[in-house]
View 1 (cartoon, rainbow, N blue to C red):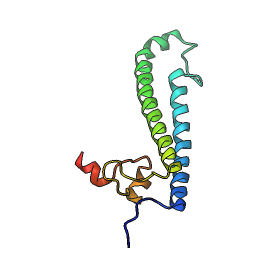
View 2: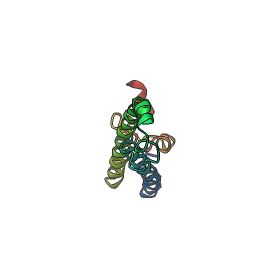
View 3: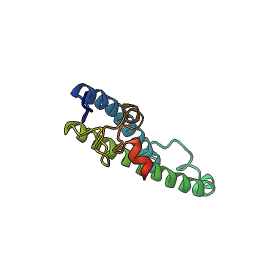
View 4: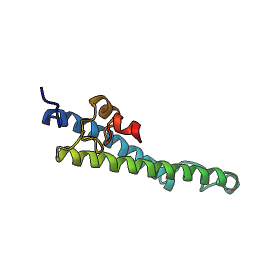
Length: 124
C-alpha cells in the first residue's frame, strides 16, 4: 500500500470542525482580554474613589500590560488557526512544510495549526 500524501476530505472536515471550535473560543478570549485592557466593562472603584485610584494605579498598569501581552499572543493564535483553515481549503493541511510527509493526527488534534511533523520539530 502506498503511503498517504494527504488527508481525505472527510478527515479535513473533521479537522475543520475542531479548528472552528478553537477559533470561536480564541476569539471570545481575545475579546475578554481587549475589554480588560480598555476596562470597558469596569465595575470597580476607579471612577469613584481617588484614594484607591492612586494606590491601585501601579497594579492596574501591570495588569493592563499583562493583558496586552496575552491579547497579542491570542491574536497570533487566531491568525495561525485562520491560516490552517486556508490550508484545509487548499487541501494542503496536515502536510509537514519541512519533510512533505503527513503530520500525525494526534499532533494535529493537540496543535491544529501545526505545520511541522514531530520529526521536523525535533530537528529544530
